[in-house]
Length: 358
Ligand SMILES: Cc1ncc(COP(=O)(O)O)c(C=O)c1O
Image 1: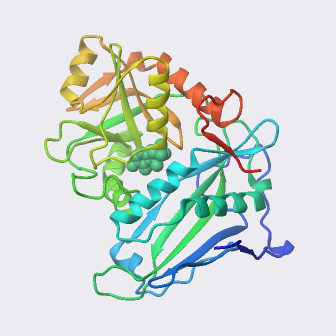
Image 2 (image 1 turned 60 degrees about the vertical axis):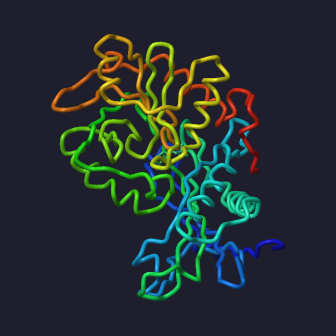
């Protein structure tokens, strides 16, 4: 598929960019253009193009609206001190998108084409990439089933699009620990389900638990396994790590959790630093007894949004446990500084993870 057509927004239609210093928040501001392409069974992906940002037009019977055939991704572009713009391990996101698509019976994308589309769109929207510390341009690729049909079935038509928007620093007030609530009442995913796919149903399933945790003053929910409700799985929309004694533990990729890009990066870095790293099941009973014996040093979550999110407090069975005295741990801080340093070009990338866009 050669080249993309680009239709630029008329100068009068360009949006006003937020002034520097304005709190950008997350996911409320979108740039001036979208990348779009369609898929039809028998024809494959076609008509790749960049167009002015606009609402989508969908038949009310579009299958995505009824049976949830949708997959998406989330990654960021970072402005370096020299004004160049970089992505962090973007192929991993498009490879994960393809695995999610396969699980939802949706067509896969050519990873290189999707990456080229992302880069072209970012180049066009370069001035939207914010420069303030900790800010970035969020990239949201999305694939939806568009065939109009009300019987439960696999769609024969899809739309893939990429939208962009500047987002603020996750920690505008500094690197802070979060409080988490262990839920036994709700589950996020069971083996054989959709847990390892980045698809809308997983997020819909999480809302009520998240809401109840918020009502009780907690930031996030710690999800347990669906069968025994005993083993840690994920925290909110992040992966989870426990630093016990000399061992860094994270739950294994057994189908129920999202294989995070940040999770993979932390595992890689920790091994590179010579830490003992285990991808194994870890029960809440083990976590609590390690806490009580003083062996549990740190707990942190990992994800594109916050990179590392230290856990300060854990509520479980009516009890509240303080982790590392509610303070940010040494390893959490070191990992955060290392990854963020690489993403923003402040330290040299020894792993070949960053890719220049513009
Ligand atoms: C459910 C869930 N788990 C984990 C993650 C962390 O993944 P990543 O590090 O690729 O952002 C995310 C965010 O994408 C998520 O939505």
